[in-house]
Image (cartoon, rainbow, N blue to C red):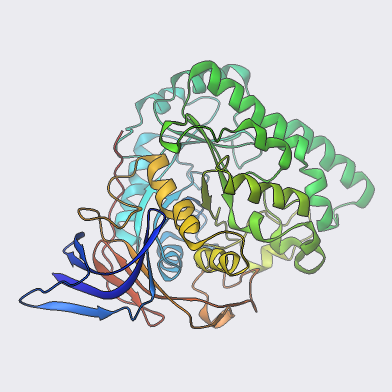
Length: 442
């Protein structure tokens, strides 16, 4: 199977070049200004549109198994495909929780059967499963996930000895959710005493404040330095935490890295008045000053990657009073478009956007031959166009069928998406599927 994409403006490694690109089976085999091929070849004229690598989202919650009334791997991976996210790494707080290697392999089998795009899954950490952590395979699993702030079931890792053992023995990248549980419980109790269950949503970033984040993230950094752990702190939200991270060495040499999420780069606490619990998430969307600090850290490379933390809940669940409304929001279908909107507003260049959403996650996780447009790499590609696109319920692909961005109009659309050389999305329709389990060069 051969395909040629002609006249594309290829965004790769900080440059934009106009070129043709030849795909054969799963791979990019040639990039040249003029390519001629004999035989049966599918041709696509990009007409000078931007062509970028497929985005790699290192943090999503697709809710399967056990929580499939909210979402499942089939529905959410198709939303990802429609949004130009061609690879995802999914979290372990499902039912049963992904806390043994056997359960992890069962989940990989679900991914193989149902996913529309490339997939990997984290092994989850508890206070009691260090032996499972030690056995995880660095070449076939994206990482280990530890909730150092609240989670479901027994996935909160809060016992000092368990934390020491985890950071000492983890054989693979350790991704962490960092919030101090004791502080959050205290401040939640104070808010309930004042408001009852109907706490105003604007209190969320006060209950889950900057100090709660810093207490946990600084502890994680200290432990990582003590044991030389490969630590990746997810969804940074506060100015206070940002000096924990370095920008004086290349990403490939960093032992401690950080992620920002699209909703923390887009929303601020000023949006709670309109959006309410729809943008309730953990860690909380915080102040404008915090948002601007996160942007600054992203641009100066203290923060390394952009992801979504896509975390759908049903509309009905989100209508509950504050204490019962779950945290999380669906985002994976529109993350590239949301960041293209930031490009249009002068936040950063399209080349830097591609760096943070494609190149950097590939480098950070050592993903095998993805995240770049290079000869010999897997052909995960996204063709963009300049057609306006308004988010409505009719064009959402999430099982939960809502988005906090409904009514928002983007200047750009996702035109076509290839996954492993197969055209999987075009003209707002899903086409053929050719996903693969991610592999890692570790």
